[in-house]
Length: 451
Image 1 (tube, helix red, strand yellow):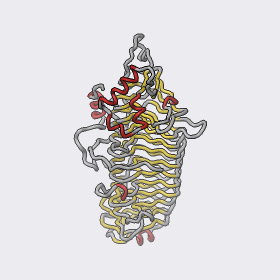
Image 2 (cartoon, rainbow, N blue to C red):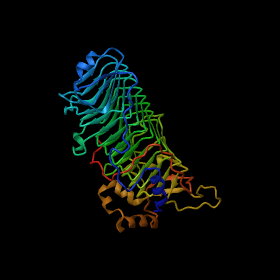
Image 3 (cartoon, rainbow, N blue to C red):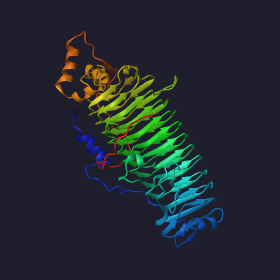
Image 4 (tube, rainbow, N blue to C red):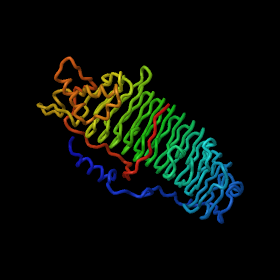
């Protein structure tokens, strides 16, 4: 494979791939400044009496100290505090529940949220429309910020930090949208949690977030018309997984080191009208995993302008593709460009104007496009698809001889995986990513992908 020196240098200059580990909280969002007009409350103690005494539309500024929850905002107000104003869980239940439309929670630290998974105990539980949660730090919480059955929530500049010492399955979701619409989840830092979830929720924007060392960076289910752009998913298991969802756009996201046997940068299952454009997928077990997408007649899947490098498998089809186009993507330095499950017909996808670093053709007319088609075919991969245990022999002479034999013996037909009639001779410049994060080299535990 070709040298990665220029690629690594270009990303490192942008701040994306550095050999030096960074502190987990480096670059964490800062709380918003103190409001110009607010009523200051000091002394700490139970928070609920303070909220009950507030007037409608009032702004409260909590002073430093320890404030005890659980507490519930029942009338519209704005609650602000510095980082050392800590609302702590004093009893089981969500620490702070926002039940009044138009309220805001800014700054502050929320410490702990009980341990009841069945009750969804959260640090901040939003159950009203038009609520803003901004610049909040969440620590020691099972669930972080839970937004449930609301419209137009704004979750911005928060720092949700899970417990890396707890087993992945015993951590709660960091940010969770449930039956929520028109929300904006932006510029948050999420660390060492389980999943960031968008379920049964439509018309939301998830952008400019950094999600580090989680299981699912963002997991969509039955959620339509969502836009996911300019996020960085680093050292997790899965970057973005889209399931049973329609009209989802994934743009300019970085997925780095989605590792392990179950690792994948982007997974698509039983979804439709999905666009994946200008994403950078680096050092992932699988770059792009496709299963029954698109799933309904008339829907499409478009893969455009993505960079997929250093992956074990760049693109894996779990089912036969249809109405799927790959255009202007760069596939380089991958152990395998494409893989397909046994019994599938991967040639159903349309490939054009993509770059492949293992292309062996030529460009005599100098137009930047190869004069011969790029073809990926492999008899050994067909065997591995039928008998997965043979994957142990990859790189060994045994499987290499299978491919040699398929070329020498006309009666032994290698399995065709893809044909690109217009392969580009050189890669495109890297997409201009605006949200980056360094890898610490710490990987999340394994996870299985089950319905």
